[in-house]
Amino acid sequence: MRTAFIVFDNMTFLDFIGFYDAVTRLKTMKFMEDFSWNVCARGATQRTSHR
Image 1 (tube, rainbow, N blue to C red):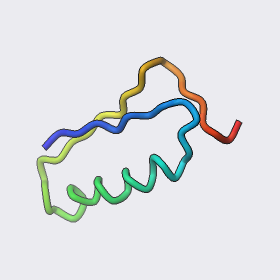
Image 2 (image 1 turned 180 degrees about the vertical axis):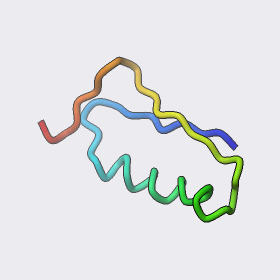
Image 3 (image 1 turned 90 degrees about the vertical axis):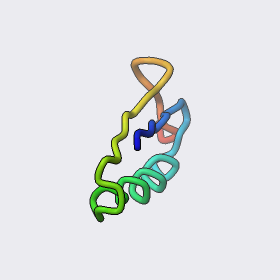
């Protein structure tokens, strides 16, 4: 299974890590050993809400 983590301007750290931590455990806990992901964004840099 392949998925993408989409980052965007004003995203909080919890927006990202809350989902990332739970979903990536599918592979580390061997529920889905073929699980892979990419981090995607519309631009080369993104700004967090913690400027």
